[in-house]
Image 1: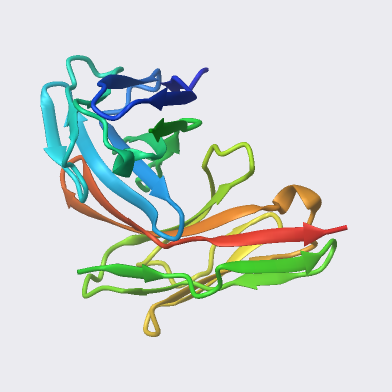
Image 2 (image 1 turned 90 degrees about the vertical axis):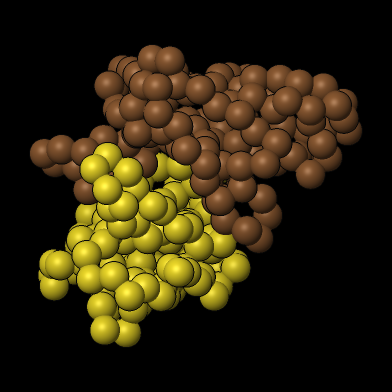
Length: 115
Length: 117
């Protein structure tokens, strides 16, 4: 059982380049989300999805796009990378139902550096 | 708006001793959940313990327990018999259901705990 898988784990970009952070989960979770983690700021929500075809903005969505074509995958796209997007990114999923209290299941994180 | 405050950026504890990490939150909601997540140096976040606000009994998971004071909006984590593997960043988090299938999480800024041999 892989859980939540993120790729790549490390990436260095130049300002203006684009890239996609991949996230896949094999737990059939409807809810998926992307967070960024910055020193002294905890985790901040970028975008989230409550199911295939449904996405919404979180607290810090500017500069990022997402899509949810399947239940399993929730990629995060940086359209034109900026140094302010240097951060560690986490994908997390959750489910609603018997036994769930809404806990998040996290991927291992992706460290992105924008030069 | 909800907020979560962890006032201790860093803490240390001797191996086998007990340590308490503080967390306070602010909300006008009555139904919500509280969590402690652990982020070891490997970086992956894992759930330590959770508490439903409607439950008066404090949650316990082996060496981890919470002191949930709903009126005071306090949710501290106690780690007993600390082990070297407890060294990590610990995040307190507040969650409420927004609507079906949608959750709103607010995370604190974290407490870095170091267990000393």
